[in-house]
Image (cartoon, rainbow, N blue to C red; front, top):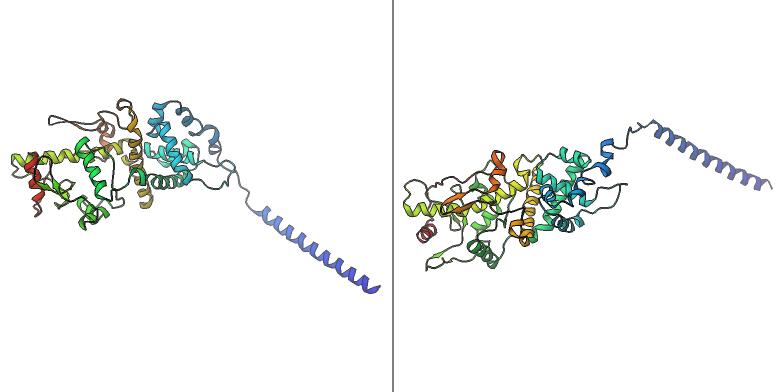
Length: 376
């Protein structure tokens, strides 16, 4: 009997001991939580109004009913925005960890507005009623998603001779279409254009004959064989694959005509950059971002340029808004009629006109001499 009483007493003491330890732990936890600094607010009141007063909840939804303003705001129609969202948003989905999360479509809208307007991240944050850090993270994530979802379809670099021939046909028969086909982003601006090209992957692969450019062929209507070439200004070296103008000194009639024709060809890329900078005005100001994020921004804008131009191909010419008639330079019997993009960029843009061209002396002149005789 006494043994049983001792056992019961020991169990009771053990339970009391466990109970006291639990109570002590709860008391210590309570004191620790009570001593912590109490948060003043969950979020700023201006940001708390995002779902009622933010641009995405109001202005963007209203513009869906106004095609002209939608294009002005996003640089694309509602239909093109929705198609872009179907491609990009699956790459932006993530587990829900917030009561009112910012959707992938809203983050896409923020990024497009940032690229189209060139406004600061602070301005975008205030307009959409989110924090600046949210906008910063959204821009980085969305630009990366845009590049990954669009580059293989809309900015695919040619890899075979047939693909290069397709580009050649488009340039010579119906003029170039102001799309970007090969890009290499990331070199610093203190280098010359020729130095940047030489150090780029495109330049190195051209030098090593790794681009699968077609073999030289006869120029139309002649028996003269010429190689396929890139066209550059006086900043680039004369190579078997790079055509540049004659020096301005002692130009005869034939060489002047050649330089003029070469200048017309180079205006295509100048106009392509002009369209890009006038539509995506992030290029009209300093990009305040790290080098890596700046690369993402540039690649996303180039992809969007090709995407919108391609998707607008089925729109009647007079109804096109991204690339309307008379938007680029045209040639009227030797007189250059400047495109509308030059008026939009004005003095703030980084795109400059092509001046008269000069050159140094180079050994590899055979292709240029042949071309000069033909086009004169």
